[in-house]
Amino acid sequence: MVRSRIAGGFGGLTSGWREPMNYLPHLLALLVGAGLAIQVGMNSTVRLALGSPVIATIVNFGVGLAGLLFLALASGARVTPGAAAAVPAWAWFGGLLGAAYVAATTVLGPRLGAAALIALTLAGQMLAALIVDHYGVIGFPRNPVTPARFAGAALLVAGVLLIVRR
Image 1: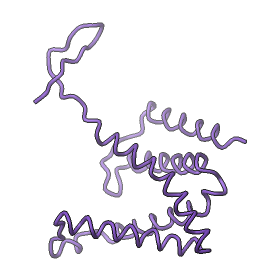
Image 2: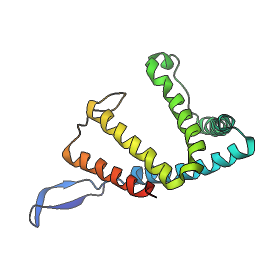
Image 3: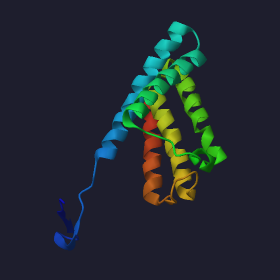
């Protein structure tokens, strides 16, 4: 196991050891976020060719479903019998939010531009995330809004205003 000594205080060393931070989840989140901007352009191209944002969204989910089915089969993923009954009713509607996001961004992307669209959706996600974290709802642990977290969200919103300004 790799351990690193952490400096603390005014240049002094702490008496303990701390595990190094694993940045892989951060990198994956960054890459997935970059993929969203690309996905909007792809979906908008499909919408223009097929003439319907709803049909383009269905195509998006169909291709995604095919990819996930392949991944599930290749990895041997299985559902435990009876597991679906344990899912709360409200949790099944997450797919509708995903569909609404894909359909809306397919239409809004060409109108707003990639940077403005992603900035605005990110600001909406951040504000909702602060509320969800603060109250610890829909499967997230409680993580209260602190002045630092609020300031971070405010800076993000300020960045959005700079991006969408014309």
